[in-house]
Length: 125
Image 1 (cartoon, rainbow, N blue to C red):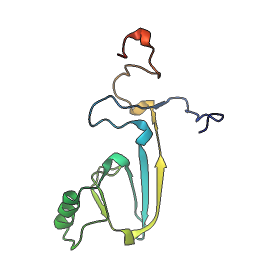
Image 2: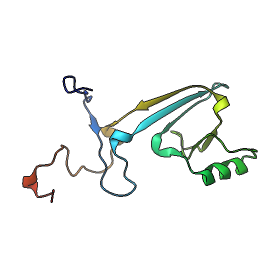
Image 3: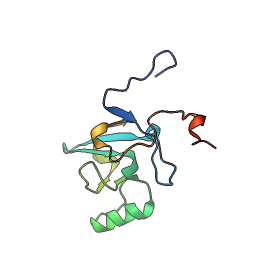
Image 4: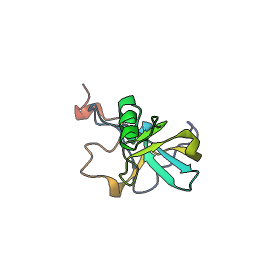
């Protein structure tokens, strides 16, 4: 995307912004990670599921009988499974930005569907 070449949004897709709460994730920061392991398994997760807390990694290692913490700890992959991954297990990996969401995955209604909001709506103070 550049000023002379805009980023196209496919029909039925939406660019998501946060909703001003502490745990809101703005679409500009959303990423999808895909890791193919040496044993052939493919693990996919979104950036919000990647937890970098040492206590979570230690807890996973203890519960799975491992003698060291995983390099990557995923709270929930796309199938809802908790994962611990060690760098030496990884055959290949991808990090893809995905700021768009298909309409079928959106629950509820959007308050506003364009940006910037007009000051005439009295939403900006």
